[in-house]
Image 1: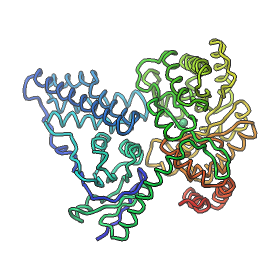
Image 2 (image 1 turned 90 degrees about the vertical axis):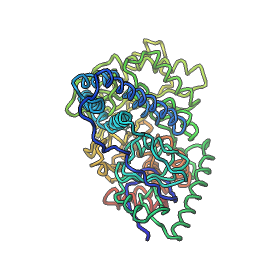
Image 3 (image 1 turned 135 degrees about the vertical axis):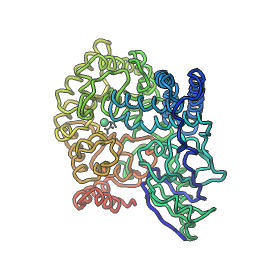
Image 4 (image 1 turned 90 degrees about the horizontal axis):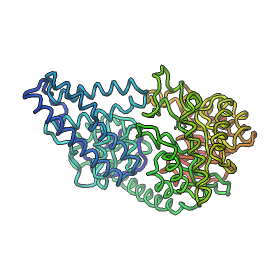
Amino acid sequence: MTTTLTGRPAAPGAALALAFALADAPGADQPLPESRQGDVDTEVARLDAALATAGEQLTALAERVAESAGEEEAEIFEAHAEFAEDPELRDQAVEAIGGGLSAERAIVVAFGAFRELLAASASEYLAARAEDLDDVRDRVVALLQGRSVEVEAPTVRSVVLARELTPSRTASLPRELIAALVTETGSPTSHAAILARSLGIPAVVACEGVLAAVETAGDGVEVVVDGRSGEVVIAPDDHLRAEVADRIDAEAARREALGELRDEPGQTGDGHRVELAANLGDPGDLEAAIAAGAEGSGLVRTEFLFQDRTDEPSVDDQVGFYLEVLRAFPGQRVVFRTMDIGADKPLAFVARDPEENPALGLRGIRLHLARPELFRDQLRALVRAHRAAADEDAGRLAVMFPLVAVPSELLAARTLLAAAAEDEGVSLDGVEVGVMVEVPSAAVGARRFAEHVDFLSIGTNDLLQYLFAVDRLNGAVADLADVCDPVALGLIGRVIADGHAGGAWVGICGEAASDPVVAAALVGLGADELSMTRVAIPEVKDVLRSLELERCQRAVHIAMEEGADGREVRALLEEHLGLG
Ligand code: PEP
Ligand code: MG
């Protein structure tokens, strides 16, 4: 009997394959011994062996993931390996063993203390990493108990179903045998979902009841997964099987066809130019961004280049990074966003006092101006990189400032940039300067900012967070911050029009630009550039090339006028753009 369930879409694509239900981590519910059986030295030796093995396993996993999914995804496991090798964590566990606890219990205690320490030192970002800490802790405990942490894997291509998937379990699965992933729990922003997306595996999360349905259907049952709608069908009938097989063939043909667009410019079907650039945060991603057909970068998140460092990068270190990115895009614009430190992006080498509301606190340009030393070094590095790049066939430097709320911040930042250029004896001719529009005051006052810059870049991630008062890290309220809400689209349209009236070009660099329907709406509102996650570029390029500018304009205006909320606006956009 066919059963249809719906979860949350987490990675696009269709799949039809045999079901393979992963058991929960074996023995995970086994009780832990409370007290140490032998002497302290023996117990510490057991602990050290388990920590060392965990570190080695996680480093090997990082290497495997770097090969299959890319450097950026591998960083999760490099960080996991660092947790396992952390001397402070070990010291805490050793102390607990000295106090009479077993190595298993001591490591649980140490991880607990470690988590509290991190959470107290810096913001929500670390809270979001709690699942990573648990993943490493469980591996060490399993090793101490002599349990295997290797995940059982299917031997034929299958839809893998699980109650939950940690990042390391996901990465341990053999990529070529995974047709799709379905979990009972989880959210589309979890690392497992991010990994699935970057591996190109369709995925559905929060699909309650799927394991029981597969068990009831019995061995050898097939499952259809639609990673776009979130629909999961157990024991599909012949009609659906044939339909999905056709869909899978069409998707493969589409991917191949999209590859041919790589060197084509971003534009509408009637030749209206819209630059399609990549958001970058890791030099390891440059090659993949170029392969995806990125036209430069509309957002280099420079703070991400240094997120693994515990000491401040020198000016020369920074010049090296910036030049590497500029060299990857000859003749194209590369927009470096000065370090946006604070709130969800703390950096270990920038000590900050705890804040009650870090998202509303000392972050972005506010931190630059309150503590200008780091900012000055970064500006010097950027202008030096510009001088070096000018002698080569490299990209064109553009600089933009994050989280600006009032024009005086922008003017102060510009003054510091001019001073850095003067100190370095570098001319800023040809260097575009812009401002991120991600605070409602900057959006409403866009015209006043546009007069002082070459460009505005709308950061929809933060703009929606502040516009709708929705913490961008809190999944429970995420649905409210909908870029298709007529208020949000109306505001974005106004920023674009005011930016143009003030003589600036206007781009979008938030996640919203990577959704093809929204991208077409943004073009209809007059956006000159869209910068997005690299994997989205081919699809967005293709969709825009299939649409005339006037159709995008008409669709977005009808949708905003007739749609009462984000859901209705999206449906109207799809209808009037002919996308669905
Ligand atoms: C944004 O806020 O939309 C943005 C692009 O910046 P970040 O996501 O890095 O805060
Ligand atoms: Mg932002």
